[in-house]
Length: 224
Ligand code: IYR
Image (cartoon, rainbow, N blue to C red):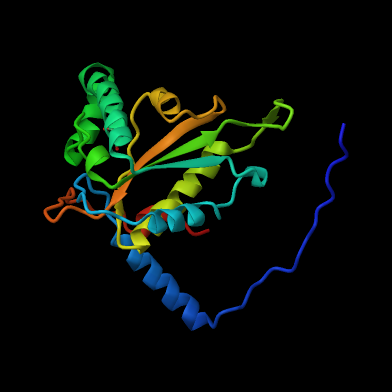
């Protein structure tokens, strides 16, 4: 058995900001994020690959369990592949909306106007599929345990979505259920499990969003 690696440490690069700057930046960032909306209505206008690269780079800076970085981002722009993905997702979703959904779930989704028609999967110039590594695979093919992979991928998805918004683009978090078909379609190894599908692009000129409000700070924070 190998001895555990001794940790190598380097100085943290950090400059303390004036308090006023911290507060101003914090307020600006919160307001910026509050302008993010999920929409189902995408323009077919092209988005250069560079934008998607920036967002994946940002997502790749996310903290992860034991720094195992348990993620792969598959960025699809090929029209045929997007159509195949849409066809397969819609087949699952037709089953979901017709049979698998519970009455309570249907009622919860009603205000959002979701259905089994996933036009965004072919309209959006990019569809990015985040795969979660349920475990690692060492060079000799043996299985390595990974830790907190759900949390790690959830945080990475958040960074990705924030980066997309910062570039003036929109995304939609889509969770076809079940997602097994994505690993097959995108030829991912068995340890990679589809986690989230995110069409990315510009909003359609007539894009609409549900008229929803967000919980105020007092409803989501507790101070002790
Ligand atoms: N996976 C389905 C259903 C769906 C579920 C939830 I919770 C949503 O917030 C939205 C949709 C779909 O993607 O349509």
